[in-house]
Image (cartoon, rainbow, N blue to C red; front, top):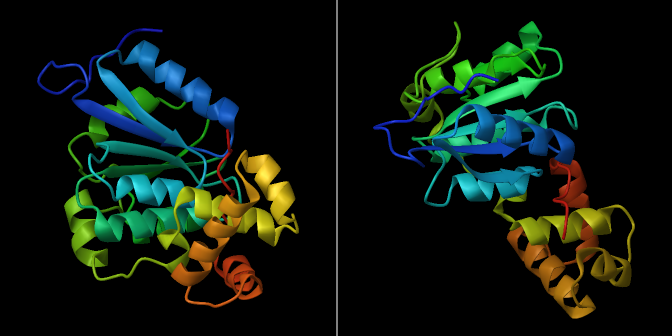
Length: 229
């Protein structure tokens, strides 16, 4: 593959890119592809959950560009995108879906993304990244980073995104019927630590019991929990 230089100022690391997808193979493939074709860009992190993506995009240093899949569980990528944009005025958000429909375009634009593209091998992601560096709108009907931020900045952070990735993972597993011991084994932590995660999650969601927290999580979140090491 031809190497493309989209660095800014010619310094390694100037172009920071984050990649979000629930498919670990897709994450690894895209990271390798971009590291090969854009050697002066830096993949600063990858993620496979909405909560982790929001947390990282709202914590400095923020990536210049986020490449985000939306097709892994309904339309949750739009909610992640909208939450980030309401509180981040520097990162370009580029969405990908297996098939891009008119509804996808409308919802992506309303969520503050700079563009949405089909997730296909032949999609020229390198060219898209090159254009996205400036923060400009990438497609007709979309807004620039600054325009979208001004429009959405008053939106509060949804409750489910106030959880840390570990809190979200523990509560998501609990919502699937796993016991504290099973969650402990899955996450590789002590049962007491799991209880702490779930208790903190309950408080952040504004409820008193684990059962209430699970109900809120199930109603408001459709995000795939992070893959725990």
